[in-house]
Length: 282
Picture 1: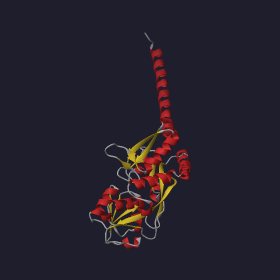
Picture 2 (picture 1 turned 90 degrees about the horizontal axis):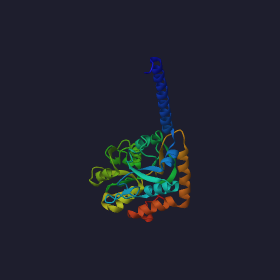
Picture 3 (picture 1 turned 45 degrees about the vertical axis):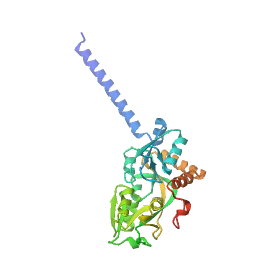
Picture 4 (picture 1 turned 90 degrees about the vertical axis):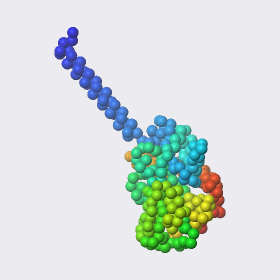
């Protein structure tokens, strides 16, 4: 029979052991929580890339096979291959990508244009490639400038939360801007005559008009709004992940990998270099 004093001692020892276990567990959790993205990707041998369905030429997903394509898939796959890790595609939208980075659902998102609003929430890489904002104007509507569209009677469609949305809102605050969940829904509003123009980056605009000339005409409004296409990352104190990807992007651009991926994805949707609007370069 164990004496009361001995029992108390055992309970005390058990409490100390339990406390030590709790502290060790908490310490391990804290270490896990503070582990930078680069180390975690390398440890788990998996890179989570945000991807947007029905967003050619940036991302393409075959609904029958589930196979992905598009130049950001190609670029992401090359990055994962050089890191010798598995690439995991996580479906998101252009409007939700920043939130998914912050929620730790994805490790990187290619194709986000660095706007001040986004830069307040996430970190950006250097330029992956140059881009420019255009509009698809309905037949018979041919604005020459952003000022031509900055009028109360003009209706413009955008996909909510995207750079298209943020830039159109800034450049055409007097216009009626209608926001849709996806680029395709914004395009459907143009096709059905509910809006006068859709604000979009040139690749999506040129591709859409090549596929359906009845949509209207791709116009590069003046003043020319040049932008860049970048990768975005969850903001964390340790910048190893961002710095590594920046180094890799310089390497990939130098090899011509980025340009090759872009040109190939455009050709897959019927867009050739000669189709680029005046003033636009790859």
